[in-house]
Image 1: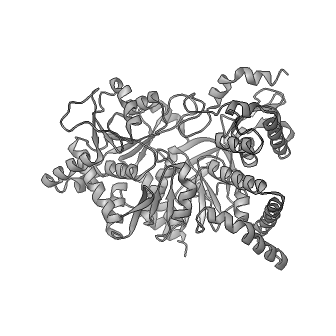
Image 2: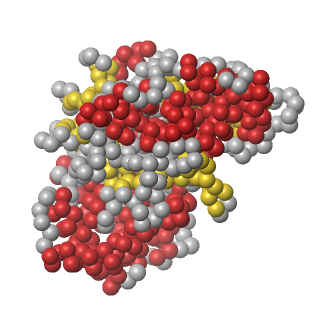
Image 3: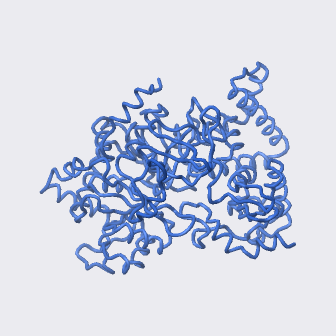
Length: 617
């Protein structure tokens, strides 16, 4: 039974005062149930809530022994793994606040984030992350200790190098055990002293322009997210999550907090290349992911069907048409005829059941966030019996503000507001949000904080959107990304780009350009792995990546995809010319943020001549 409105309000209002308290409440309620599992070689190791609680308590005490005080910042520079979660919980249970650092971030960005956040301790995954810290050590006078998961620690008693001492997780546990022997109640006292408004996390926005800003999120923002999602009745304690999302991103953090509220176990492994194998092994009931994961999965499934021969391709296409027909009738509340139902059962046995098996065979739904999901991709997955629920939020709203539900969803929208959150549309179309998840402000940026809010405490999201007649929110584009052609027509580039991502598995990114021009053009960066697979099937197996990008075969294939895209667009949105780049966009060149969003201004500057040439042919 789904919670009623009264039940939802009660759950949200009675939530724990802090994430630390939320965690130990969960440990007390279900100590012997599985909390996490993580890969150890070829097997998976499981931890109960009680075992996790013991580890977190010792690590938190270790941080206190290192001199960490309430609301001081403790940073984590690591990929998604069990130790990331332990470090995050330990920091908060010590009364400190976590600063998140993407492991792919360049050393200059790492230096800026740690300096701006005034972090005192850093959990660093490996020697690569440690090297970044040592490279910037002269900029980090407050940073004194690095705790490494896999890196090489300094010898115990050795002098600190570059002002930094590197210790292992085991050594931090030893420090914590010693501290607890003398001060057995210190961790509990720290937790009890935490107030809901106290800083829990500093997440630095990846910043598609300029330096990242530190978003200050209090404990109440995260406890709200967990309680609000629990109040929706989407998940229960018998669910199993597969978690690979970057935990430096708010989306991943939301799923961690929701787990504390609901109590389901989570299988953790951030290695994207292991996802397919892990899903088959773990067999989760739900997973959160960015749209690119679904687009790539769909592209691979279609490519596999095409490569298997004409008969398999025909069966796949026929099954897709049947599945879409059933999906559309079901969503419209229309009956499915006996003949169509029988045809679908055959399609399911021959095609869709095998698709579901790729994801473990037990999925109840996926949750998509962080960027726009292509409606055709969402619809295809639904036809295959896999529901993808799209949601919406910002780092500034602790990740989740609006979401579709299994019992109430509409593709092409991000759903309806979560209980306790208000969403309205400004006169110029900008989405405004108010609620418990909204940030306190930007760290040490009072002017930017004032500019982020309008009216009576409404956060200006920077996104343009609209509600439909049934209250579903549609996000059209970033306000700053909309452009106008010389003919006076507005174009939303991300709308075009997400459609292309659904059509073309070869593309890593499409970047549409056309501001004050008489037509739109595009830069297309290839997905390296998919392009190499395509090349092997088209007689280009030994070609370099640049040779593949420049080949006539690829140009012809890409042209067909672009023409298919254009058939779905308004005349003024169509792509008249395009250029295939001979390399991928990257974080290192500044063309992508650490969270893999395109920095349009950097791309436009880097390819100014290429773009100009497409208007002067």
